[in-house]
Length: 251
Image (cartoon, rainbow, N blue to C red; front, side, top):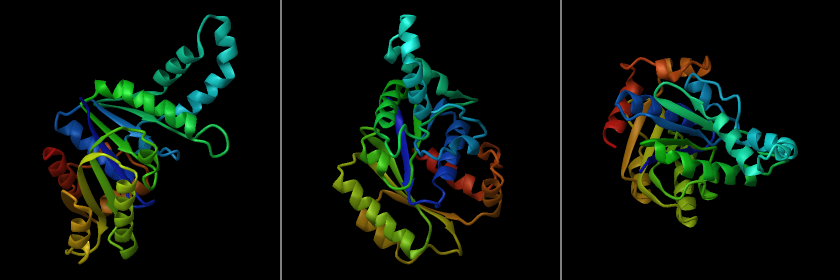
């Protein structure tokens, strides 16, 4: 049975960076192979992990649509072709594999790509002890029941008042949509100063969060993000890596 970690929050708070560092420390702690899922249509988790997702679930669906007729002439069903395309879109690397949702087919329609990714997750995730799901902003992917149950749901925010209010909104939305999770973790990212925001303990209590960690505003991490560097190469003595390592060890 896979242990599923789903990372979400509003845009620009460092969800993808956090997801990449969780993958890094899962590997470092011998919990590989890890399945990394980029469920954000803007697809940038691959860069933070030092790989390139040349194909995505969205593109696979479009290719199947265009090639299905010719494949049928050779005795290949549409489903068989889709399965082949999906397997080709899986990026294999040292200690982890990655699959990306990519952009949907058609203007604004994610339904088919979402359903395909849902079936893919159900089918292939059982081969991995840990799965890290990097969501698009908000709870859209989880609310569409991309996964049935989350072991660790991670809400990421910065320390601003608006960011902290977003945590409350995410929690209320998760309750409203009946999202099932075993544990809830709050991550306050890019914290400036030694003390966490004064309201954070109150917010933690309101959400019934099991734990909370604060990550400092780190120049080295910011430089990696700005330069699109591979976060798997971030030094182990970096303070944020150390914090994520503590988190992974506690799973």
